[in-house]
Image (tube, helix red, strand yellow):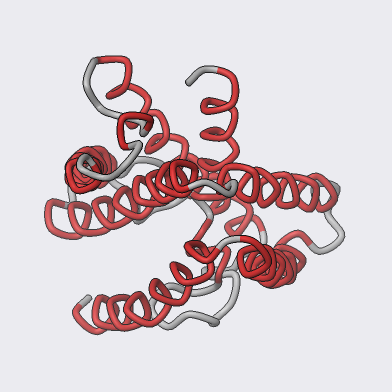
Length: 218
């Protein structure tokens, strides 16, 4: 566990600043970044879907997911902060699930993904709430911060939990296809994490969900 955790930390230290650079720069840089992500994820999806009937559906969904990521990122600072907020929920959900699941163990969440536990699920919820509040408090003094999404009532809290839930569901959904293909990871691209699809499986579901929420509700 310690060796795997160390690899995860080291990989994250390298990957996160690179991803943030392209996300924050936006414009052509972000488009280039998304294109690279799409090509890598598409390659990994091909490995687990092969000639199965759902292959094309997966390709269409991946394209839609990255399109919504581009649209959600937008071109303004407020759109950037909101996009980073969604990514923060996904990352903190994943970290909380991993840490709480490893430490508390307990009942398994589903047979589809044997490493997922009930404790990990609630740990993901808890850490996402904590990190989002820290993030929003940090941004509270910035210009136009009043236009940012805020956790100030039960409805907002439900939204954060919903994004976290969709992220966890996406993780399990991709695990289902990996299980059908009898593979553990989509590739060995990222030490400690597996493939890129293993890393962003929750995000590719949470981002479209969030896009629809921000576009039609908030």
